[in-house]
Image (cartoon, rainbow, N blue to C red; front, side):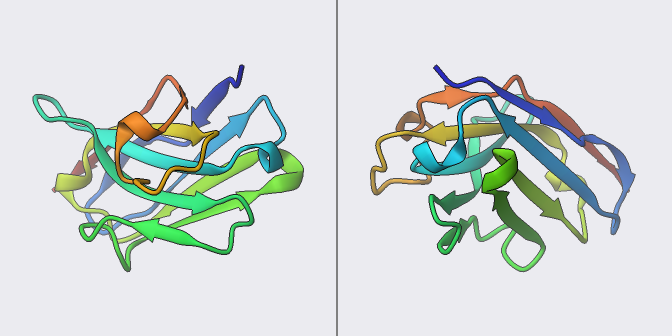
Length: 125
């Protein structure tokens, strides 16, 4: 069992920045991959970013590439999502997730085994 707690969401103006954090109850070296997804009202949950066990491999959705950065702190069992140059279309509930198995389809929600409760990010124009 892995419990995840996200924090760092909030309201920001377009062009601003936010940093999301996700603390895992299990040591992250036992987790193969950690990811961030988001879901806007009326839309499906979509992939944002993911990071490998070592932290050496990262993946990003095209819509956030160059603006968002995912990182992990193994000592603190935490993964971060630094979000810069935010746009109104980034408004969504952001979810942290962990993948214990390490499948190749890192962009699919079904590949992930545990989820956090979500944190709201609202970007005003």
